[in-house]
Image (cartoon, rainbow, N blue to C red):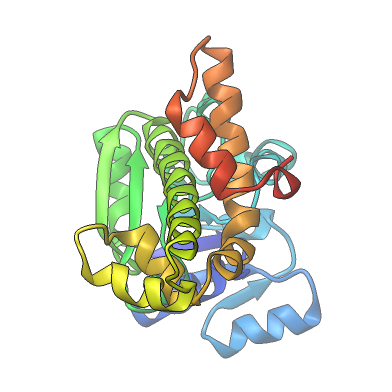
Length: 267
């Protein structure tokens, strides 16, 4: 397929590499001569502007960091106008479900899929990223050949915006689980068990899980918080804002999230 790509950063660059290795033709934005040279080295065709990624594209992937950046890329420029009819726009950035709905309304001839991810560059490298797809059956059908190059499982979780909703729940729960791990480490300290020993043991026990294993892999709660705090902070903020708009509450998740992401690390 002919694929445009916006967001060749920490997650985007290995994704582009997987797409190229799968035989796709990838045209990716590089803002500087240095980044364009790096893209060319991994087999992509570097371009200088977002609009150029849409030229003859069957799909365009947006993999920027924030919801505001998605809006800037998709609604603040000419990308949607440049996309060929029946192309699919795949938005990997985690953000508000309202953003992808607004993008779809602005581009009625284009299929839009929200496709937030769970995992990191190491999962992309092995083709084991988890992706939650929100969109029509037809939109998802068109997106799958792209996403399958770097993700497994690829889960169609509902209509447009559903991917974002599932991902926001996931990250709220994950942040809360980090809070529980931090509390468990404090309990261990009170009982005379040092953190390193505890974290080496718990992944093998009934309390084990992704959060425990992830923290254990970094060796300490504080080290893990530092590595994921920026990403979780923005996603939890979106989840809290969305729930507040709906007149709801996070319940017991809220206190655990505060324990997992200290107030000094959150907006």
